[in-house]
Length: 562
Ligand code: ADP
Image 1 (cartoon, rainbow, N blue to C red):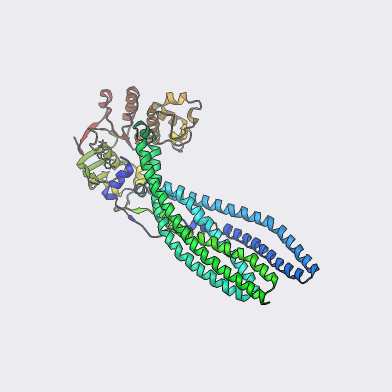
Image 2: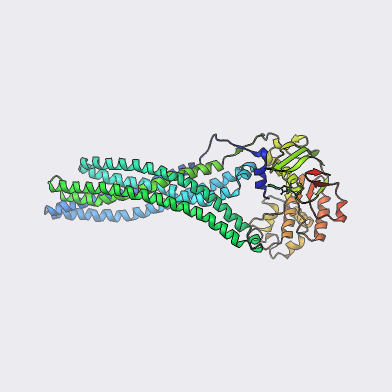
């Protein structure tokens, strides 16, 4: 059973949100405002030059039709000059825009990860890693297209439409009024339809979280799936989950397509009406032929931006929900008991006083009384399911007692600051995590130790032979969580790590399970000889040669110590 699940099961960890002072992740976009503004400015210039070409074309048509060829030639020259100017500016615009996307996404992902790393352990355990994993993969990708890029596209499309409208209006105010009414109605409708999509996007994001967490589970348990012939079952479950995600995507697409269809129809009818009106006015001699050319040229600059904005605005609004769920996941959860007590080292003892604990409805510890004195060595044995690992989880502060007290030097562990406390604890668990880095960094965990200290820990953990075998010694790279390293070697790396930390309290959970007896015995002897270190070891492997070295052996049966 995972520790996350254990934490969820703990009644004491029913936590509330601290809603105050939410520094929205969206603020990351604000930091890139200068780049955003610069990209828009460049777009504005390019767009104005494009519009100037349309206006010059209007003059060119009117001049040519009036037989004024000298003026027409000059207009043509101006058109060519503007055209040449536009090319480099447009390239620069694309470059600045790509850079804006890149730095915004990079900044946001980095900031997000920093915030996740700053979260306290309780808040992280309560949510589980897959929530964050899903945010950083699925949600940030959606936000890149539906928000970061969309806000630029929407802004540029508005600039484009308004420039075209302004130029047309400058020449004829009536057309402006007409088109403004169209734009206002259109924006209103797009806003309403956006809200219809928002709900579906919210549900899709939730489905994606479940989906990602399932994929992770399958990949993590790949070996188990293969060895237990679970492929069919896993594939079926995967099919079910992906079907619901796909179905939601399909519904969203369907709703979005319907919305697009109706709005486009509405928009095109009005634009068509406007064009007919312009042609009618030209027929009456109220507008010039050049102006009709200008309107026909500009109509694309009005329809296309409005249509594109119409597609993007609902998605952009849907992104709000994603931001909210990212922000929420980064909020520390409030504990029932405030952790106010500092912790520097264990001075006297650790005491379980009448401790009871249940996972949901399964009682595990029932009024447990236990005392561990500083510097002494303890072995916890007993039948499987008796509650030994639960005792270690309580000591690691992954969970806390339902009733009774867990006291460290007579201070309730619930009130001790978790980060300071965990710094003094060395943990050797069955599942050892290895970073994709050198063996040295995996042992030191990026802290500074002298070569002698490192050598000492390697020797004590029985790793000397393993290190000597590596072509690059301590600088040997470890890949993919130690794919080529045996379980026993991993356990010894974990033991060496804990020895290097020189912690006050050493907790071992079946650390010797994958070691040869001889190696296990020699490591155990070294650990039991550590002066001043309180060792609490859970093991089903008991050697007659070493059992004598423990100060006390507790047998844990049905949540009580004997
Ligand atoms: P031991 O280490 O002695 O084998 P544990 O402390 O791991 O025992 O487990 C004690 C009991 O609690 C077992 O019955 C186990 O199934 C149950 N248990 C352990 N972890 C969880 C959990 N996260 N959620 C629900 N039940 C759990």
